[in-house]
Length: 346
Ligand code: 5AD
Ligand code: FES
Image (cartoon, rainbow, N blue to C red; front, side, top):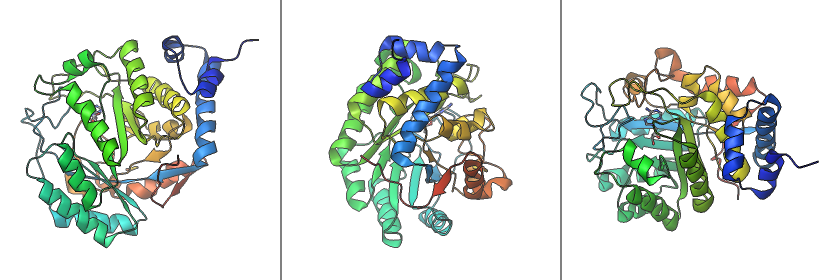
């Protein structure tokens, strides 16, 4: 009897183009169940029944870029713009620390107001107050010297989704002034400096094909990132892709599982976008092999303004306490949220 494709991918920690196509298109329930189960087994072997949490602080929605899919692109005149002050950010961290967070993720658009000097000042102030916490930055493409300065100031990790590893596809998602090669170069620079690095992509973005997805997986194998963020593309009505269909939960779950199998130690979030397209999307993500959740720590007043896509969850008053909500959700599927930094386990 021949060995199942899932077992073979697990064994080789690699996948062929044909196997990817099979796993993303099969209607065989048993095979789909096997994919999820084996991916979850692999995650359990490395990380146990634990889910790491990161406190996400969305500190600015000003952005100089104009990515065609993103609701905070500079041409979106309907976006109501905000910036958090250093004090606002520190008070988010204080609340977060008291709630048990030991990783803070500072995410924002590419906002020139936040010069390297300002970023370094914020990072070093957080680090000074909370030396036992990890700081993750997600600020987009910068010069290598800037990334170096943030590292010296105390940043530990950096998230920069590559968005797609297919150059032509990248160009169809971005304006001409953005360059695929620069984005990929940034990821290598970050690795070179010694950050724990996260790449990632949207599932079902307009123009995505089996070939482009296969390139995404090959890129992950090559870069060997510590983290990988994937979530469904969700249209935002004020963008050029406002009428495009969303990516599906099903494809996102299958891809989470495949990534767990080919790059077993990766820190893999069940993203907010996944929670947005299905009420139990994040729970299903964990059960498909994810092991991180990133609840929102931003002040409730600004949450509905950081609108990369429509219908984002956790933006109402009732969502002030995402930490407790997620803890309950994870417990409901037999997983425990843990409070330490949640570093990559090589
Ligand atoms: N749908 C889903 N994800 C999106 N992102 C940006 N716009 C959208 C959208 N419309 C993702 C991008 C970006 C990350 C911060 O959010 O992948 O890197
Ligand atoms: Fe934000 Fe549930 S995680 S309200």
